[in-house]
Image (tube, rainbow, N blue to C red; front, side):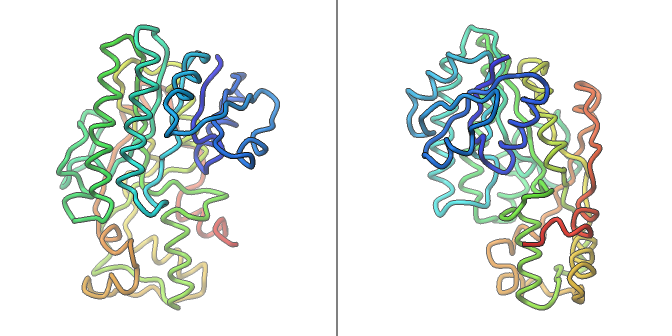
Length: 311
C-alpha cells in the first residue's frame, strides 16, 4: 500500500515509517519544514508538503494514499499549549476522516492509555473516559485529554462511514533508543540533576510500558488488517511498579533510590509530579489475540540498564 504518514520524522512516527517500508509499503510523508523534508529522503518515501493546520494538504494527502497513519501528536510531553495542539489535532483528524469516508481505506490514529477509566486494569473493551486516570488526579494536560477523548471517539465512529478506522492507545512510557524527551528520559535527567532517583510513597503505583519498535509494528499491523472501529493497546508491560523504575534508574546512574512524600513531588519532578503517582494498569491481551502482535523487544528496566538514555 501507499500510506500517508503524519509525524513521520518524530520519535514514534519515524519508527512506524521504517516498519512500513521494511514490510514493502510506500510512504507519503507529511513535512512542514525543509529540515523535515530533508530527513525524509529515503527510498520509498515521497514528501508531501503541509501541516496539521493546513487541512487542505491533509485531505490531499489522504486522497492520494491507500491508507493513513496519524502519529503526529503521539506524546503529551511537548509544546507550551497542549490543549491548543490537541484541538488542532482534532481538526486534522476531521479533515483526514472526511477525505476517507466511503473509501474503505484504513485510518490509524495514535491515542493513549491515560484516557482509560481509573481504578482497575484497562482493556480494549473500555471506551475512552472523560473521568480518566489523568483527569482524575488533576494531571496538568487533562484539558488536552478532554479534547483527545472526543477525538478518539470520532475516529472510531468513522467505522460506520466507510473508513477502516482504529486507534492505537500507546502506553505513557514508549521507550527505546532515541528517546530524549519522553517520560523515561525526563525521569533519568531529573535523577541526574537531583542526585537521587525518587518515587512517591511506597512507589507501588504502576506505569504500563512498550518498546518503540513493538509499538511501530502494531501500527503497521493495524493499517494492514485491523477491523473498523478497533481499539488497540500498544502495551508490552501491563504495569511496572514505579519504585522498580526508580531503582533501575538509581542502579544505572549510581544514585540512591529514595521515597519522597507527595508534598515534595512538585519540587522534585516538576510537571511530572502528578503523573508519577498514577496507577495506569492496562492490558493488551485482546490486541495480541486479534492481530497476532507479540512484544519482543527489551522491557523498560532492561532499556534503562542498557544505557539507552545516555546523551
